[in-house]
Image (cartoon, rainbow, N blue to C red; front, top):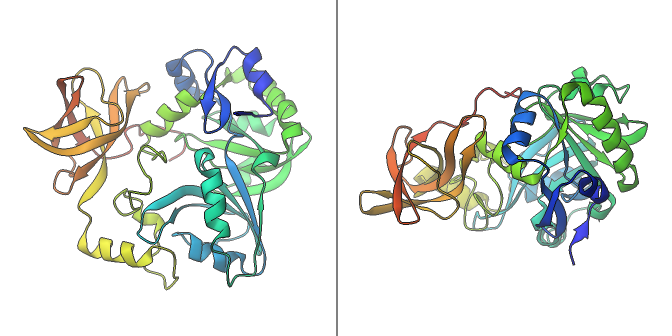
Length: 365
C-alpha cells in the first residue's frame, strides 16, 4: 500500500498527475516537465519532498559512528551540512545522502526515499561499539523545498531568520510561516534554494504561505519529473539509475566525498583506496547528444561495433534544448571530446563526452 504525504490533497487540488514512487503517491507533474523545469531555472518553484527518509543520530559517539559509516568527514561545524556516500565493504554504494550536524552530539541523516528500509537496517547493524541512539523520523517529517533564483526573496517573507546569513550547505533552526522548521540552504537542482523540514501537521500551512509569498515571482508547484531533469542538467547522480550497489564512488566520480587522505576508517575504505591507486576500469561521464533525440537509461554505447558503455540517465535538457545523459564507459573512452554512438530503438545517435555540469548558468555555483 503506497503512502500519502501530508500534502497529497494540495497536489490533487492543483491538478497534479499522481503516480506511485518509492512507496508514496507523488506528483509527477502539474503542467509540463519543461514548463516546471524552466520555472525553477528562471524564477522559483516549490516541491514536496516529504517522501525522503530522515534518521536522527544522537549520542557521545555520533560523530565517530558517522565517520565509520560514511565516506565523507562527519566532523563539521554545528549548523553545517555535507553530502556523502554510504558504502558496502566491497565499495558499492548503499546510498548517497545529506547529513546535517545539529549539535556536537546530534545529526540528521536524509536518505533517498526508495532506500529508507534498507538504509535503516544497514545503519542499525553497525552500532556495536558506539554510544549512539538512532531514531527513524521519516514518517514524522515533512519536507518542502523552495528552489530557484528568487527562492531567498520568497522564503524571507515567511521568517525572521536572516536567510542571507545562511551559507550554502548550512542550516538553522527557526520558523517558517509561524511553524518550527529546520531551514537549510540545500537542494538538488543547481539553483539557490531552501529545504524546510517540518512536522507533517504544519506542511499545508507552510506550503500555502510559500505559494502566496511567491505569487509575484510566478511560483509554481514542481513535480518529480522536473526534479529529475533539473538534477540531470547539472550532472547530479540519481540512486538506482546512475549509482547503486554495483558502482563505487570512485567510478562515479564522487571521490571528493571519499576522505582517503585522512586516517579515518570507514566501510569500504580498503577497496576505494586500491581503486584510486590502480584506477577503475570504468567511469561515469556526461554525454551531449549531437544528433536528434536522446538515449534513455539502459541504452548501449558504441565506438564502431565495440560496445563501450551504457547510459544511466538521459533526457532532453529543457534549459539547453538538446539531449544529455550520464553514462558509464570503459576507461579510455571517458575523456572530454570522445565521440560515441548510442543505440536507440535500432538506430544510432551520435553523442560526445563533455565536462559536467551540462547547464552552467544556475544561481547556485
